[in-house]
Image 1 (cartoon, rainbow, N blue to C red):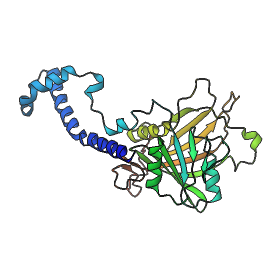
Image 2 (cartoon, one colour):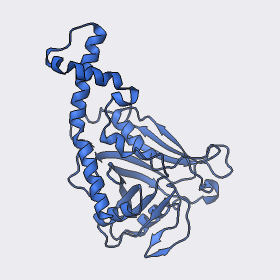
Image 3 (cartoon, one colour):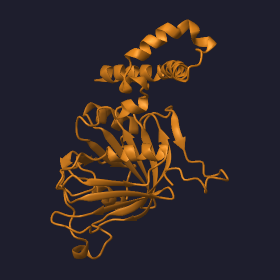
Image 4 (tube, rainbow, N blue to C red):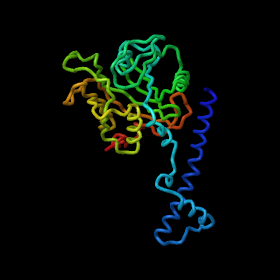
Length: 303
């Protein structure tokens, strides 16, 4: 398994190294196309390559004309199987953090080697693992060996969840979110009014992710959920407003009207890396720079 992971990683890095060459070739063909369409002479620097490039242009279609990037490859196989997610926490988590993570776990949990009762939660096909003394690299390697698609790490400050890290396997990306205003089902006193949570696969509502980084963030979030059945009445909403993503869950087994069933919280994206969470050397795709004077005016995720 270790040799296989090394081979896959080398192939991934090799494809990534070809991106610059493919992009340069794409720009050359684009200039030739533009010159032919406008009836202008071929640029001087491309005349020696004109015949070969024209032949390649004739053989291309809509799918192959634009070069693929590593970002395209990250979720290339996402539609072939349902996501399988591992949920874990920081070392020595407090009781509130354990309750918060437990409320998001759908399947049987991995806890000290024994299986606990099945719980209803946000992420279908997910399992919770007690972190213990394991380091991040060990967790990632174990998840790769057992075909997990994502790892979600939840951190806390003085018993209050304050950070969520979502790392897609096997090669990334990894998104880092600040988490705010957490209200769990456990915190809600009126359990009857709140209702129960359906275990059906949910329909997703992703609102106001209109920028390039917004579309990237929505892509990371939506691939945490499998495709639902058409008659599913469970709805999960990620609504962006001023770069704060509000999470809401509505519906139930027999519900017709949208009725919030909890939990609820807000997310704020502050970093995306192209590798997995254990790779400190991974390239940073985007990072929030709050110290810049115009940062308050910018809408990173959507207008």
